[in-house]
Image (tube, rainbow, N blue to C red):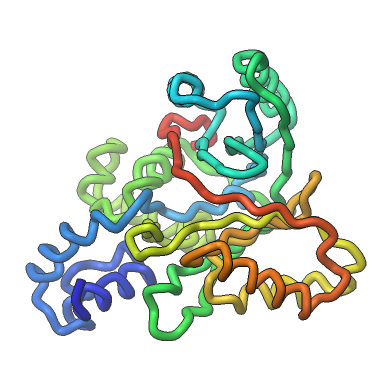
Amino acid sequence: MDAKDYAILRELDINFRQSFSSIGKKVKLSKNSVALRFEKLKDLMLHNVTGINNELIGQTMVKVYYSFDFYDEKTEKNIIEYIKNNSNIMWAARMYGPYDLCIAIFIDDLHPLISEINRFNKKFSSKINQKEMQIVYKQIFFRNNFIHNQPVLQSYKLVKIDNKVILNDSERKILKTIKYNPRMSIIEIAQKTNLTQKTASNYLKKLQKLGVITGYFMTLNPIKFNLNTFKLMIQIQNLKDHKEFEAYLQSIKNVRYVAKMLGLWDYEIDLVYQNINDLQAQIEMIKQRFPNVLKKISILSMGNRLVTNDNFFGL
């Protein structure tokens, strides 16, 4: 990649939906040149998404972490097929370390959660060694700061609120249509949702104004930049100021994601580093900054997203 490629990636990272002509003006290239380079840059990307504030529409994320007595290729294929045919689970990801797998479920009440976890456990009960359920009630997402010259402090937060937004069928269709296609044009959105272009555009603007759509985001593959993704699971004790702790986490350039949770773990943090030694150095810095706060830490190495369920019932 050259300097222009990086300039395009930085613009896409700030707003993945902005037009090629708009990006071209900022990076001093023609619209066609940006479009051609974009096709090449796709190889660096994973699952680009439209950010949706699930808490605002009455859903809570629950993550279940599993370790297996024996995890092999056959088990993985069975898990992928199970989730593809089950619209209650949004995604599943491979882990390395204390856990082998994480599945994400969005719920609006406990019944579907209990039913889904019981079905999954029953299906794979002969191989499951351990499971931990975590209720996520705050999430903070960060930009791909490793491609920026200066860290982009802009982040977006999903937190539990009392006032919910009630979506109509057309709004749900739009969200489902652009969830994993954040650059989809209004013409395409209208065609896929059987709405007029004007109606689709008005609904999209409304969802953005209400905060249901939090933005349009590019997910880069850190491996393409010689980086590895690690996940820290943290138990805390004697923490008097959670805001100070979370502000410190947000100041770390390598942090990609922070979740505050109920369960065995209090925080889940995704970071990108070249190697485990760099990560361990960062952990020591956290310990020095907040002595006697980190009660227990578990380090996971991130694998890949095994499956993303486009038929997820929540939308």
